[in-house]
Length: 149
Image (cartoon, rainbow, N blue to C red; front, side, top):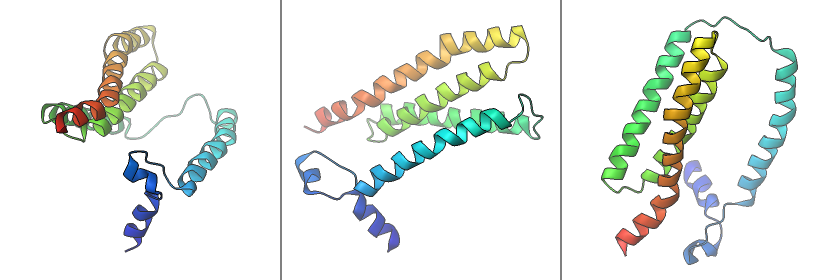
């Protein structure tokens, strides 16, 4: 029941029925406050965290991230093939993870060779694929609307 009430408050105005969806004001406020609070927190982290830190389960963390990315890319492929409404969300999430993967691969490189490989992968694979995912996400709604017409 609570979930239904929360979902109902997301679709607040009659403009939704006219094709112009607008989220509830509390949603806008929540995300604006979260963004504002994140700025001083980030400054605190930059000033207080050490530049290096040994991490347990480093291998599992990266492998898990790559499995999640692979499943997401498969989700993009399947939703594109099926012309599913899920394409927009899957492509957006995949683009995000690809950019994050490139970012962390580059920043966690410890040798010049690792940095060169990470930079090459980012420039030739991850970022172009992320760009393609963004284009798919941007065009998904238009293409799906045309298909249904």
